[in-house]
Image (tube, rainbow, N blue to C red; front, side):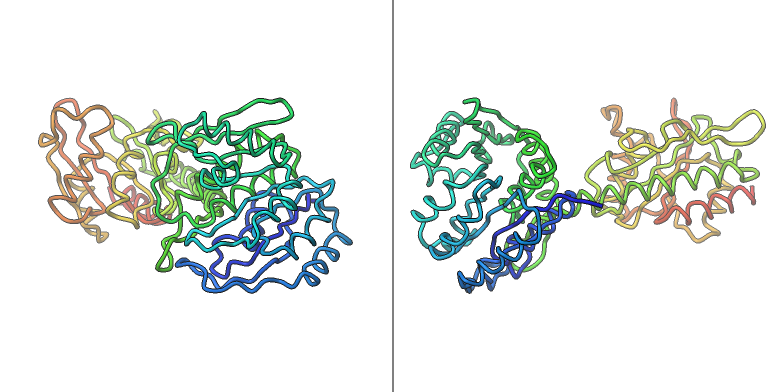
Length: 447
């Protein structure tokens, strides 16, 4: 198997929030083999940088010689390069390479990471293919005060011309309070492009610049054009920010691994729901559990990763009772379908993090008693208490919030005796698909 190889020239963040070790993580999850040349070792955590130990220039050169002698490296991502001696070493390896530079001029705590900014401009920026500054960095490098999208565009073009950089993308130009735009200037076409996204008000954002620039480098190394690379990088960054890690006592790192973990989690959910369908379709008497409005099963990925209905799967069609007293499950399982079961599970998760699977079944007092015998706590609710003003899709949210507000927790089994226009129903949740299957088999056997 072959992969493109890309090089990160950067420092080591001992807190694993940014730097070369973070770059390796991003390259790997995007299908690129990352290698590193270390420019400095920092004593760093979520609270900031205590000390920096620069790599001697001769050893930095040895690292680079070793890597270029062995690997075919066409793409380079540059993070922190600490001093003039290192600039002089690195610049000789950048010729004829596609270089993405994250201009880490200052750390989040204000620590100056580049000692001689003029030499940095001369040796590094002038050998850069894609530059990815944020607003403060773009303001510093362009000498312009930036407070509007038009000024962002002017800064992009100014930086591009001043340092002969083909592509400059300034991150985070605010169009509105909750909306931002990355602005790309393409000097080859003298054109601007905007990539819009929703702002995320998250505290833990350490490593955003590093992840973004490395993702751009990875996508370019795979053969994508600059605009596609930027879109993919922004998408990854948004998910990484959303799942920023609440670790340490300062500003925690973002987590670029989560989006790929979730893909694996969703695959597991689909597999489990397929197994569920095979099991229940073969159970004698299972049809006795199906209400008139039919059933569906909702299954979420682990609760701490759930953002919305897009992380909860249900069957595309319902679980129905056939003429021969067998059931048919409406495969395939799909994510994001706004069924009642999915909405109720989503509403329960903030209160009951162990909830994973939820199903609606026919109401009968005997079924409720059987569930009690199994050991479940049960709760009856009166749907007549539901506000008449509830719009479609809000009923399940009301059930969860009403129960939590009045009882402090949400039991596994919730049932109601129906109201005009709404069938009596039992809804119950479990922490695993196996528990759900075993419980349903017990009910079907004993009805």
